[in-house]
Length: 55
Image: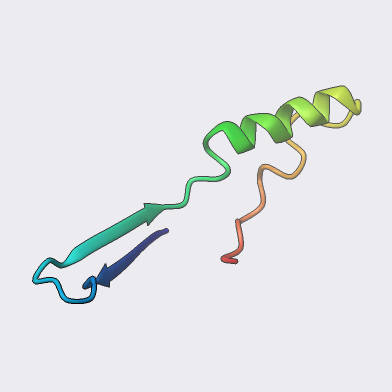
């Protein structure tokens, strides 16, 4: 998922474009869940095969 926002600061002719890419399951957060599963003796991929929900 990619979120894009456009913002124009007050009293300015500049336009700011912001973009955020959501990759929670594929980065450090996914690795943290995998490590937690190992610590608690769960299946290593538990919770990682689910489709992420948009907040």
